[in-house]
Length: 118
Length: 118
DNA sequence: TCTCTACATTGATGAACGTCTATATTGGCG
DNA sequence: CGCCAATATAGACGTTCATCAATGTAGAGA
Image (cartoon, rainbow over all chains, first blue to last red; front, top):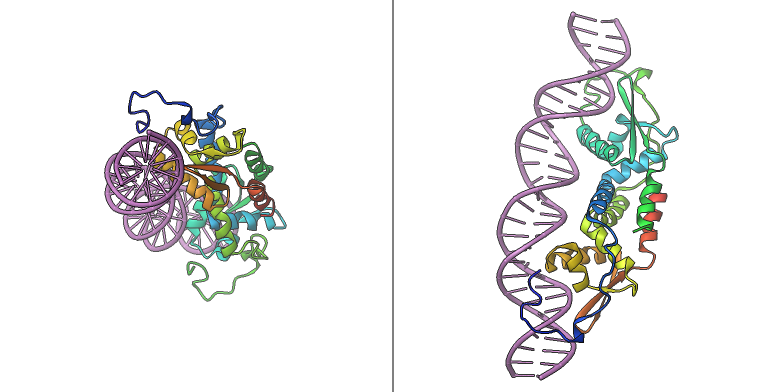
């Protein structure tokens, strides 16, 4: 701001170029929260993780089966999985030594809902 | 890689913890391309820009009406709009001095389609 | 032509991110 | 109890990103 209306001149009707933007539409806080989910989806390897987990017949996959197809180190895969869990897209279940990951029910549909209601 | 099977020992059946991951599901190149769209959506201010443009009655908004409600500098708004255009989410049309932005038809639905087919 | 206005581009800066190696934690088994 | 395997965490490093001030560009009007 500050680069407009520097002079005390009355602007005629030519000042308006389109609509006055009306309602705030999406609030700052709401937008910040929704961006978290998209941030989680904004990485190729995380998209592949979701894809692999979704395609898994059992619906639950452990880290050891996710490390190989992605050609990433185990800590990196663990990190990506954490991001996806914290975004609410994945569900973690520990059984013994292994950690099983599954799609959070309805999470992807919720993201689609965000897009529809933008 | 290289942190497993360091010893020449035959692993018994206890090695498998779940499914062998089967198909590659999402390829690296495909994932990279899809991530571009989510990267564009992974910012609160860009989500708000989309929301404002979508809510606009005329369907087309100029930059001057997008700068004020976001409390960002004009170059920053211009940058965000460029990202959204390059991601295929927005359409830019120059009329005289003004630049009008509108939602790319079907773009948001396409994103929802990506999520559904993950 | 000269100037103003709307928008884009450039360059810089600090924060966030993805990746790795190294290390810690936790559970199962002998 | 002690070792090994599966996963998580910590710290470090290079890259990408969001933002701004300053400048460039181009159209409209006097």
